[in-house]
Length: 149
Image (cartoon, rainbow, N blue to C red):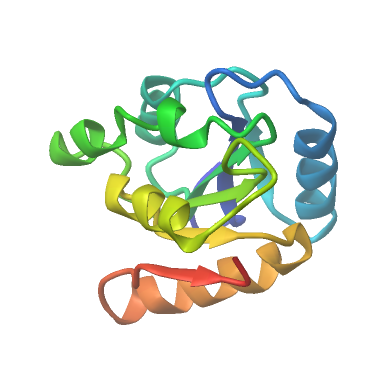
């Protein structure tokens, strides 16, 4: 595949997480919208996302899901990967992003500090978010933001 042929995203579930159902549903929905989805499956490390991005450098985003609440711990290697010039595309994170029933904005701030570009709370927003990111990339740096988090 080549960049001009189809839109490509890299999808996977965070390193300590083996919840696969949402991953497959998201992959199916994006494929139905014409995306080429490189699905790395569950228990995907930052290094594995970086390797996939090296293989598909035209991918417009890396999509990371986490349902077990350990996204922060699983993405600890993200700053180093970014510093080495790996994962040059936006990183979008969604799912249950922290452990416990009480959530506050500080856990989102910690994820952004690691280098997560977009945090989604609703996977239905993913196609529109990818469209926004695509437009942002063609006009300048990727904005660090949160969509419905």
